[in-house]
Amino acid sequence: MLSQILQARETVLSGEPLSYEAALGLTEIPSVEIPYLAAAANEVREKFVGNHIESCALSNIKSGNCSEDCKFCAQSGHYKTDSPVYPQISVEEIVEQAKNAETMGASEFCMVSSGWGATNDREFSVVLEAVRRISSETKLFVDCSLGFMTSEQMVQLKDAGLYRNNHNLEASRDYFEKICATHTYQDRVNHVEMVRHYGIHPCSGGILGMGETPKDRVDLAFELARIGADCVPVNILNPRAGTPLGHVAALEPMEIIRYIALYRLILPKSTIKIAGGREVNLRDLQAMAMQAGANGLILGNYLTTMGRNPARDIQMLKDLGFEVK
Image (tube, rainbow, N blue to C red; front, side):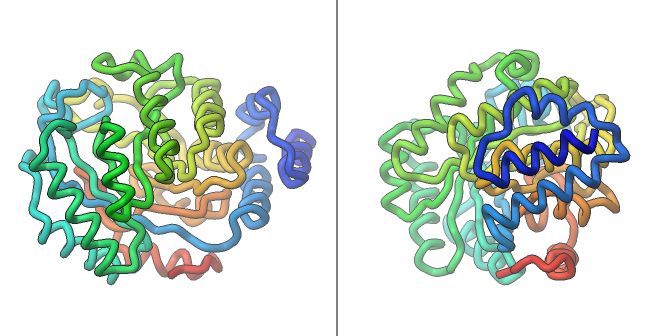
């Protein structure tokens, strides 16, 4: 099946989109050929987005008691987990975290809030001021992930200096109803399209390993391409006790690498960012994953779980020859 990989490589490097049928075919190549797929994807990455790494640090500015019922999420108020619960932190705390993130080597800083209240003026004013201050007091690109927002809030955030807004599709359209019932897939698509409409870079990705099929993973990638996702976080499920997906079997590391490479071939010009679950699921193959077409990663801790020491990640990226700023 090496011929499939070579054909996909030539197609994408020539500037043509990878066909849906070709992408599905690559989900079936034997595991022994995944390193060849990774090498082809890395060539595509070098041609279209270069050697610069986007490194993003997250701040969980409000945790727990979310009204949504996403079955993978430890912060959902529908489930009993050991996830921390606390109200929104202050502007000063957010800005201090951003400055610490810049010191540890991050190029982006993303504020994440669970149970976001779009009509809560106090919470929004804190975020707005934090965006203004981080934009003026650091060199970081400022992102946020606040659930569903209004068009007026989008305009205000853009004016304050927001660079990206994260709103993951999480899964394919067909699989989404199996992981969430409190809002629709189209609600998420509409939000990402609104973000792009107001001139903010749309960040949207998903989670691998929730029980979906290979076809679901391909469908998600093509939907992300269709909506113009500027940055695509690839999360790998880290099952959390107390959630409905708490006992899902983990994906094999090489299978994760298969889809990182495949997402690069489908989305040649996007940032492919390895995100939550990479340490637990990729283990010693994290460096190989970064050579499968990825050009971004989350530094430091995640929303409710610990990450790897940022200094180790920065050293890994330098050892791989990436341009780290």
